[in-house]
Length: 393
Image (cartoon, rainbow, N blue to C red):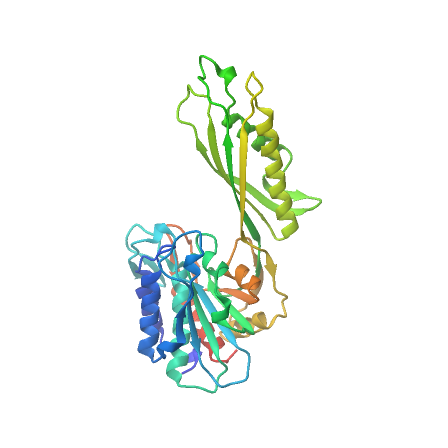
């Protein structure tokens, strides 16, 4: 069977089955189990299926690791890898997929979960097509289903690359239209900033206190005024920065003693991202030191940063991009190349030495209750994945 003769009904049924499974980040075991069951039913030897122990190293405790599946072959051509992530965001828990014309949506007040069960469905369909073809003359291939993508790309970050092996070309199926070939992505760093001030009664003796809120306000105002928040455009480079969460304080009659902020910095240039982080750190250090009690006591700062993903960019003549381009054009579509403004599993695959282009599966309005899946795009993603795994592209 070839990509052109895809069983559309069965391919769509696979997506409908997978997207009904809750599987939020850290709880992907049931999703993985269903995928394994489908592969075994198709005739894959259980010895070709493995889980790594990424969940023992992720920040969020998980109930399974990344699922790695090997498709044996005797051919000498390029070894291909297909990948997608199994987890979904909380708004999609309880999804009940139904068909509405040319789209799939959830018939209850949840997101659909097409991000990224459609990616799982597409590469699962491709793998099953290859298994059932009975062809052993193809080059060996590998497929990977990652955990915890939605909470900082943790599964791909902690992938046991030894279970994957050498990869010549790689295709990560995630969000967007199938025409878009994402050849790179921005790098991101998350920050947690904890300020300890000096408490006092705000009405009786405010001068004896040092407000953590005042310290944070001064730092944020300084960053904003100097152009280091929001879109950051400097001689050193371009990036973005945002303070997204502020938590602290319990009463208006208390000079706030503690405050926790969460922020992020992004850039396609690692050095520029690091510069943004240092500017944020410096602003908070100065602000915390500048707010004192009448006795001269200042507050304290704890500043923590965590790299979510490093930036990368593949050249447009990369073997993965050329193959993806051929597969898309083979369906009569016109592909275009774009660099992503957010992180992808491909960011960490690049660090592992796996250079992947990311391809869409027809997901629309992801992470919202109005999420939908374009059926035609999803089926084309299944065809593209099948063409790639069968060596037709």
